[in-house]
Image (cartoon, rainbow, N blue to C red; front, side):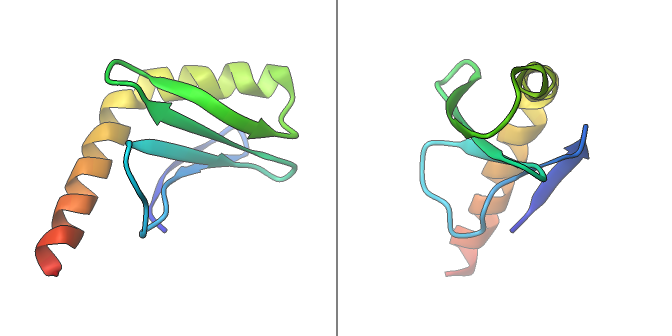
Length: 84
């Protein structure tokens, strides 16, 4: 389960056996969210028990780091695919 980064009490990650499209899970003490890549940006798809103020912080982190998230996803799953 590769962690991408941590900020504001949340872990931004994806699971090692993921599926398309590119997406990132955000997990905190009290809740979680999932953002999917639509070809231009990561869009909130679902969230559970995260305050709106935290969602704004998460949105900023997602937008500021979208290039890293997409790059790490592509790199990780390319490497996993090549191991098969």
